[in-house]
Structures are given as structure tokens and as C-alpha cells.
Image (cartoon, rainbow, N blue to C red; front, side):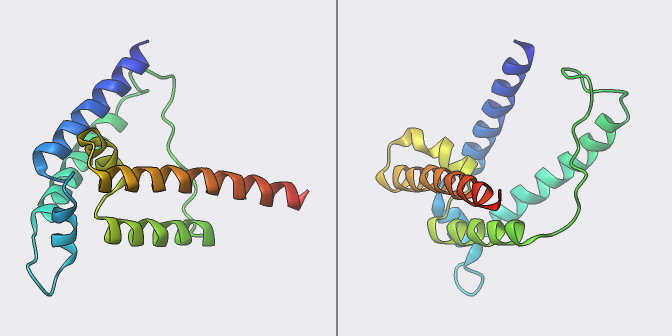
Length: 143
């Protein structure tokens, strides 16, 4: 129960932060990407702030013998770049640039009920299911 409550509170703080920073507005993202026009640097400041908080808190947390709510730290060990990772990053970047949403801000903004947000979220969820089905098909084909 503590783990679920912790995850909920973390998501709530994240969502509120995105809303306060204006990151749920696609105009902010598109304005940031428009470096030759009316460039809006506010997203860069949000990213710099997030990196600063993460850098400090990660170092503090990793000094602990174990996490507070689980028995051990789950840190990815893979450091290689493969085609799936690069293709996923490319698709993510194109979707971010065209739609003006990251997945997190899109989910937060979906409560607004705006058609553009709901279409983006529906497309994102559809893409997740198409990917899962494709991976299942390809893995079954390998056997």
C-alpha cells in the first residue's frame, strides 16, 4: 500500500509541476522547438531545473544502503544503443515535435477534454498496443 501511495503522490507532484510550468500546453513545446522564429526558452529552464534536482537527489539517495519502499535499487545495467532504442527515440521525437506533447504532459492535459489532446493520447495508446502486438508477433516468429 505504501508503494502505491508513494507512486500516486509522485505522479501527482509531477502532474502539478507540469501544469504550473505550462508544459501541458503544446504551444510551449512547439515554441521551444521553433529556434528560428519566436523561440520560447521556458522548456529549457524546466529541463535544467529537473536535471539539477535529479543530480542532487540521485547522489543523496544512492548513498543509502537500500530504497525506502523496496529491498534493492533497480538500476538499468545496459548501456548499449540498439536499433529498437534509436527507432523508439526517433518516433518519440517526431511525435513530440508534431503533437507538442510528451506522454506525461499529454496524460495530465487529457483531463481538459480538448479534442487535440484526446486524439494525441488515443494515438499514443494505440501505438503502445500496436508495438506490443508487433513485438509479440516478431518474438513468436523467431521461435
